[in-house]
Length: 335
Image (cartoon, rainbow, N blue to C red):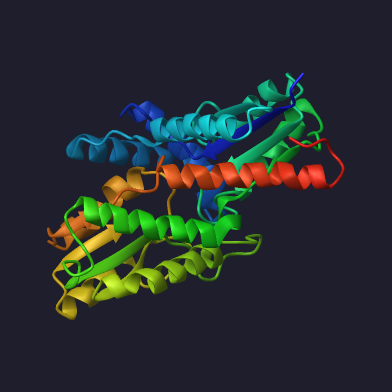
């Protein structure tokens, strides 16, 4: 029988229906698993805050006609990755799945179902740019939940973070931005006079005790590579952090501050690329756009995330295959 390797793409997930009860459950999970790590929110306040966030999100989504594509995009990423793996290494039985961390299709249950088939190897791939307690670290928490519910986790289960391929990821993003600009009729000459804003989720500068990694180092390092490579095509470039307001001081410059500084220097046209996300979601399609709208800036080219871009999926496939090659080098049968 061929060896079986399963990969699980993991993301937050987002509600597919604009429903207050669904937003409420979703918000409660985020508050408990993320927000309480940086803000001293007592447990008794969670339902109240979750209810407020649920109503607020419901009204916002209805006002702007927003429908989340995140889950659909992640499914497409999984389908494309499985297709690439089967093409590149047909001797292996490849199976790619999707798990969510704040919506049903939770990682522990998905993982349990996969392990019942006794695969030779399972790679859990957090679909986030940075490694942090708020992103890939949630997978480690899910592993602990698995152990509590189902028992020990086999050694065959490993985590693979896309940022481990940082230089290659940067190359993919640079070519992606250039290609998207050409698709919009802009070349290196016509992009002059414009500013490039690289959007990413911000984080607290001085995290509270217990936070090991905020994700700043990974995101900032990738952003600096992109700024260096893309700066020649624009008059000005900057990271713009999408910050919250709880937990103390957040990353700088905020998206608002970066845009205002550039406009103060005479820039009137912007290109916005949310490099800090691997798939479009509420923050890239709604929150980021709202910042520009609130500043009365209309001349903005909003680029999508990598989503299921072919070069990005090929990078993931290469990373998965390299993991199997390394495994074979340590004495296991080659895949």
